[in-house]
Length: 243
Image (cartoon, rainbow, N blue to C red):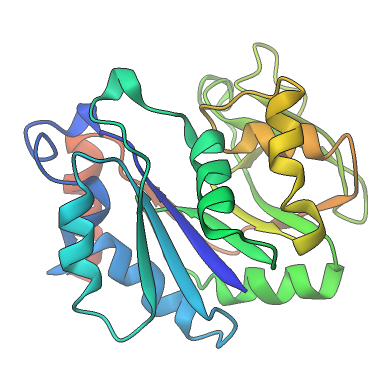
């Protein structure tokens, strides 16, 4: 299995911190956000290689960071240099699939989130289900639901429908940016793009894929901290410092 980390955004809401520095490498408790994620995932023993997709503006920062690690980490450059040029998460995923000729199981995660639980449980869940999988958590706020992916499931966790940023959310199950692609589904990213799935949000491909094949959604066993702006970054620093 390989792990693809989405880190090609420009994090404009975190300026000036990220004006010349990538958000996934910002320190939390004196450790880059990406280190927290990789150290956790690596404990599963399932991932043989990590691929970080960066934009061209920040790629050197990621290369310097990767050189300090014992894990096999490859840094890919999507060639963009500004927020206006960005490819979108789904096109970045396809870029890496093409560049690296990926054909195995693939764990795809956003590089700007911190968790108080282990993603190793998610990997185990996906292997048990034998399908591509996502995660879900209960979100009571309709306002927040309109800004994320919302999923309907049956009694066995199988996705019935999924919609990104719905005007009228069908459920309160919200989907964080953590995905497991079965090897057989990896080539379908290109087909999803060709079929018109959205490309900005990574969940847009899953929403399309769920109309083509079975996908299951594991209930998230803890909290996720999404670092989107300066206030949320300061809040996460306080939470982790107190632990």
